[in-house]
Image 1 (tube, helix red, strand yellow):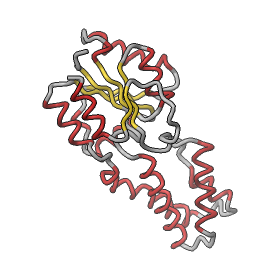
Image 2 (tube, rainbow, N blue to C red):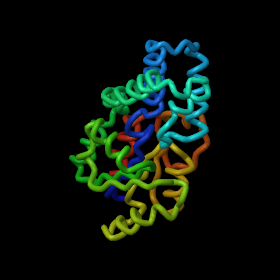
Image 3 (cartoon, rainbow, N blue to C red):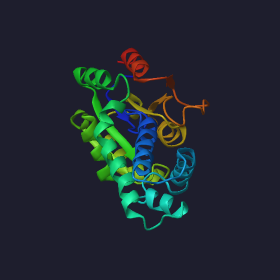
Image 4 (cartoon, rainbow, N blue to C red):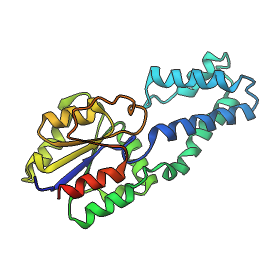
Length: 226
């Protein structure tokens, strides 16, 4: 193969989203306790994580549900403290960028390799992350799909990529998840690297062409495929 392009996932690939999310939730709970929420941290922590699992990360009212389940539904003084603390944590997002991220992106730019992002989520939220992380300008094109489980939502990216005239086998997809990053893109003819970071890293079975524990290893793999 001749490496022409690389497609990255974002969450738990280019930045450590699982670590950040846990940090932001911890900040929120501590802020609510400082405002007078007399509920043990451990109870709030367990409930809040259950709510995130139940409703997903793109739900807008995790803390409203938490307060309701704690029997404090209309206590907006405490609720607002939690929400504000969670949002304020975003100012520290750059501390959670994956080790080796800048080095890898700079390396690809120097080698004139096209860099794309293919990520699932709400477009404004994903772009917000890119801006806060300071990596938005590295990408030649960014594709945000609502549901990466739905293969049909990859069509815009595939149409764009195929117009470039590159072989799909000359492009690596790099992500942390077997189900939405590795398998779909491998099936479509792309080379794949699975990065074992974040909450899915315990699931070791993979069909990826290469495995990496971090972005430093990803760089070594790509260097060998130039």
